[in-house]
Amino acid sequence: MSAIASLTRLDTKLFLREPMWLTFGLVFPPLLLVAIGFLFPGFDEPLAELDGARLIDVYPSTVIGLALAMLSLMTLPMTIVTDREEGILRRMRTTPVHPAKLLVAHLNVIAMVAIAGVALTLVAGAVAFGVPLPESPIWFAVSFVLGTASMLALGLLIGAVARSTSVAQVLGFALFFPMLFFAGVYVPRAFMSDGLATVANLTPLGAAVQAMTDAATGSVPSIQHLLVMVVYAAVLGVVATRVFRWE
Image (cartoon, rainbow, N blue to C red):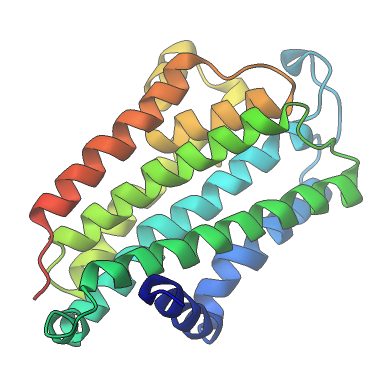
């Protein structure tokens, strides 16, 4: 078994022992979708603004975006900074296993949790409200992968520059709530003004949610949305690796 595979397996066991992060990434998204569908009036009614679809039909992508924001902006930076503060990264530099492999293991675990959260959210929507599964599953998967990559790159950058867990929390929260707004958590994207929607589409999470929503309804995601995610993933990933501190 390779070093990355071994570290990923170990990191998975450690992650499963943290009920808060596991709840945020795996349990909270489907529960939130079900709660919104049952508790908020109008979510299960057809709307002319959505060409006869219901808000609950397009909201799974928003809930998935919420899960990505939690895992990328809260979980990942805290994990990286904790490893640095406890000297784990410094000690690993003296072993044949480069500490970068530990970071890859962290990314692998969070990606796996995100995938499981997506599956549970889609199943919950289908079972509870008859929400159809994505009509373009391949484009939905592409949008999800690019969205995950762009958000993880942002989380990696926070972990790279934060000097303490408190700073990581502040930076994470500073980005978390605006990202949720642009993803349509507070105001559904269907009701955003054109100007606000344009700004939202230039954020990694806003572009990801819109691309997943388009794929879920059978449309091909906009090239602009896909490019926005690719640029964020590439640029932030490169910057994070350049400024990353192991000690």
